Amino acid sequence: MEYRISNKLANLAPSAIREIFKSLTDPEIIAFAAGNPAAESFPVDFIRNAAAEVLNDMPITALQYGITEGQPGLRKATAQRLSQVFGIGREFDDTVIVTGGQQGIELACKTMCNEGDVVISENPSFIGALNAFRSNGARIVGVDVDDDGMNLEKLEAALRANPEAKLIYIIPTFQNPMGITTSLEKRKAIYALAKKYNVMILEDNPYGELRFSGESVPTIKSMDEDGIVIYCGSYSKVLSSGLRLGFVCAPKPVLSKMIVAKQVEDVHTNVLSQLICQRFVTSDRFEPHLESVRALYRRKCGLMLEEMDKCFPKDVKFTRPEGGLFLWCTLPKKIELNGFVKTALANKVAVVPGLAFNCDPAAPSDSFRMNYSTPSDEQIVRGVRILGQILRGETL
Image 1 (cartoon, helix red, strand yellow):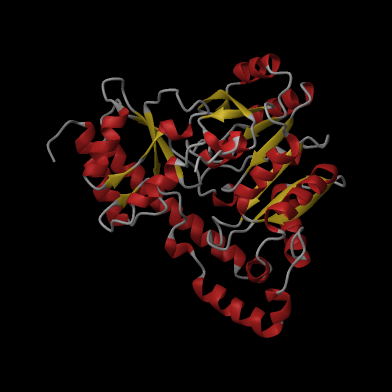
Image 2 (image 1 turned 45 degrees about the vertical axis):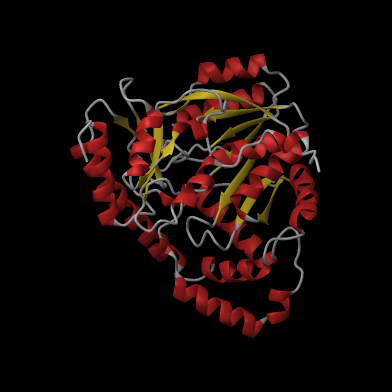
């Protein structure tokens, strides 16, 4: 039979990162290509006990259909934390629970964009978001990123050239894949440009709780006096990625349509996961847990950077994150990216080539992403040293 796949998906390639994950089943692989939270960051005992308590105290609620918007207790706790920690939420806003931050991104695009509409995105950017836009028929226009965020001149040029643009997608804090943070000045300017050109901002902030150095920068959503920012966050990086919990704070008229779209997709987010999460974020263990996770990533990132400083040639450039899970390396022109990535994998070290994060899949790249949360300390040291030998052209 000839399978006539929809136009939206016919030319959509699988996530390069998900494909790389298949190679990570080899226990000998050092997984700098992953994006997982550190396994040792999971509060396993609390989750085990909370699950037992929930199933003992409220089994029918936990096992029955739930509300599409999310469990009231978790919605309230999430909205309160957004307000208290990030200054997010106005009278015109509301907050709902979604099945991971990824669903929030996809629902925002589905709600705001018709096929052919433009989404303006940082370039490079998160592959999950790019594929969400592509699967909904949106056309992605990439804007190059400087060390302190989107290039403003190129952003305004993209807005002028695409008056039909519906969204500006941005990960302003510890950006995936680059690990950089957009400056306060640029955040204000991006908000002003969105208002000037009548475009919504989709602010993705899954790593905002993971700052381990430097000064906090206000979210763009905290500046939103005009109802033009959709804010997506996640519990995946601070509690458990497997529980699949995220949240969206957005103007009520937009959110009401996102809820309708969610009803079609999955009816509601897993209720048991929500009830476990609610107990955690409202307990006196949440803040100490966050501090321990930040300390863990401070040490892991510091170790990786220390080894890279020692082992990488000086003409290999890399970012120095103040939080999050990733850093970004750029090769000199004399080193060919694909050959380097293949040689690294042959020597049991996996990194993600920058091609995977391009808004234009056909565009070249001379960069690759590294993750420091997943590998052990010993793997970080050994893996960076192997990469350093490859970069210097040494025989392994």
